[in-house]
Length: 532
Ligand code: G4P
Image (cartoon, rainbow, N blue to C red; front, side, top):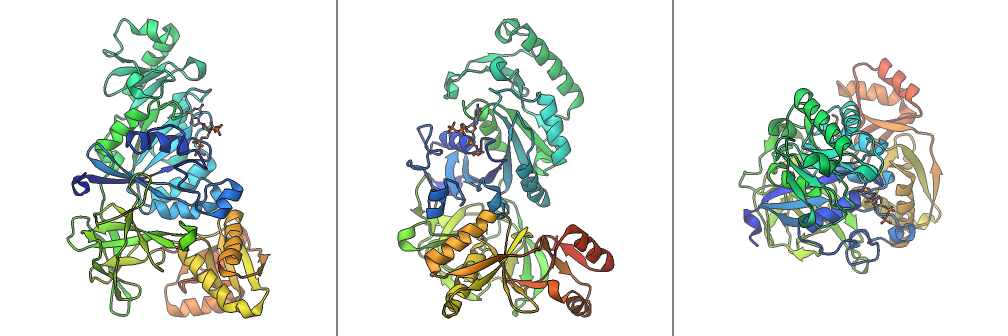
């Protein structure tokens, strides 16, 4: 297959655990021809257990790490970036979202938008990422479709426009009506869409419909469609691409029903790689200005959005996931690593085609390439230009722990381990201004478990971990250096530095943060390291 000719579509699924993300991933991969047998993604021990890399994952039976699945669909090369389902690893998900052009939001139709989806939505909103929505599990008791739409509009502040519409739900689920193709697809539990019966609806005038859908189902459908055509804005490609309107699909991922319509939408409409914002730097790596790097630019550029250690335990490897932003990337090309200002040759880049890793010969904007080496999240590669891509921020952690060594002779091991784990993004590392204490920050407690496990397992370090009463941190931006100095004296005990040496302030509760903000109105307090 000539991959060069295929337009890229790089996307991720966001959802609350149990909404059906894994089931949907499996079906999408089925459409992409990657898997031929249902049940391969779900199986934690089967062929397709891509996320079984870490011992701890196996012990806990949870999926912590995220991966990339690439496949051809229509004239696109799709890259589906998997995200961890467990909320304690949402930082990993946030960063993965910086590398995609669009997202698919999965909703359990009995529950509507749930807590974790709201958080992830906020990250998508920061970037106005186009979003399609799939209302799942219609084969069970559900909220009404209009309630679901209202729920999404209210919570996610986005306009919904249905592309398909359900006829009944639960044991009365009869099928879906395609509002733009004017056809009805009757629900059966056959998982191959070729076995689904399709009826031309003739603007709902087809005389067969009342018998096929039942009088009540048919009348409800007529009423709903009248309302939709009257009161809901029709689909607009521009609004979808601008991230202000989400096309909505209904169905059940379990029975592969309604998924085909979603795929047929994504094929032609999901956004192609777009321009990425970068900061241009001078020779001392001080910021000069910002510029948009367009995918059409000839010179190669890309950034690391994720680092994954131990994909292959035997080789103790560390793979960095590089998202290509512009130009062409060829195996063995020399590229410029901006942070170290060094040229590097990337000899064994890998591509995650189907379910294998393959050596990649060339890659194009939108592609995700795995590279070996001690790279960090946010590292930028170019041909020669001194730029760094923005939009790969650290997000404010919510729980904090102080680490102290049990064996002082292992100080170097601890230093190395913590630095590497923070570069990988497994945890955030801070240093306290007043005493140099090492403080770890995480979004969820499980993240600490992983760090503790890996420090012992990989770095042979035994340490004590003591919970700290901080509730959060902010990255402040000061109007002048003088103000920063005054602030760091006044709030000396609360000042920390992150692993990149950026000034950070901690607080014990929301009241303390509020007071800090009120007393320092000229300072902006950001909850991410991108200061936005
Ligand atoms: P997640 O990755 O978002 O956490 O969800 P996952 O796909 O694992 O789905 C969670 C549960 O919901 C699974 O059931 C799955 O089979 C079920 N499910 C997903 N989509 C549908 C759907 O459209 N209809 C119905 N009825 N169920 C659906 P489980 O009992 O936890 O696992 P399993 O024993 O079925 O594998």
